[in-house]
Length: 122
Length: 263
Image (cartoon, rainbow over the protein chains, first blue to last red):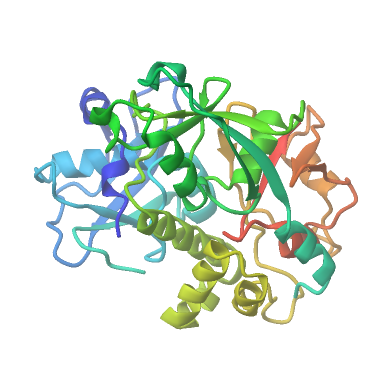
């Protein structure tokens, strides 16, 4: 059971990946009109580790967009699966907006998301 | 714990008359298909109740579209299968109720950027279980779901899928219990939707800082201080003096979330 095929269109995500900006160590982010929140991407199970784990992302973006970003970053094949988990408990639906998850499940100013290539929890 | 059993039963038994019509562009036969009428449970999801309807329309469409994923719209608005049916009706029809609810059935031009794909019912189950887990993280730090057995999880799902109230509530009651010394959940799982279908979800404590029970009026002034809105769920406007804890225990959808529309 998986929801991996249910993301936004890849073509749409590709142009948006360029907009995902690095979060600098001193906490500065590039100034835009959009509200950004910090997410921390942690590998689990057999998933490859991401060299850069902390990212500042547009709070209005959906989880499906993050999934496509991670798949692209890890250079996964289009048919490879990727699962994202919040609180190491539940897999948010791809259309859930980052801001809602950050408000409810963020800790210490960031939202921790675990990713893996097979179903890890539930 | 939920104890107003009549309320739970009333909510569970809520049904909607729906009239499905095949999109004119899909019809390949000279003979027009009859519309398909059915009563559907408000608490269910469309993929669980449309097998017969799909069979009814399949012989009227182009064979090359027969294996495509079917999708629905109301008034040009594609309907998300992963939201409960009754909630979708309240969202799009709540302010101007019509019965039967007339929906259009499509087998082509799937709106990729709006709808998630639903190749089979396992996907609905996965989505449902994940939402229950999210709600339990908010209510009990996830402790109830994680201590349940797999067969309990199955029973929840089967109870919903087969419209079995007792089977469902035998398990769901444990998710509606309060833990610890304080009576009430840690937070109330609630999603508040605007007309466009987007929603906000925040940490909502069922109590005020002085320990008194928080009511709907107080929630509204917390979230919308400038603009006092009204909230609707299960086809009714929620009285402003309803305590949030009671609302959560009795008016949540089977996924354990309150889905309320601004009206």
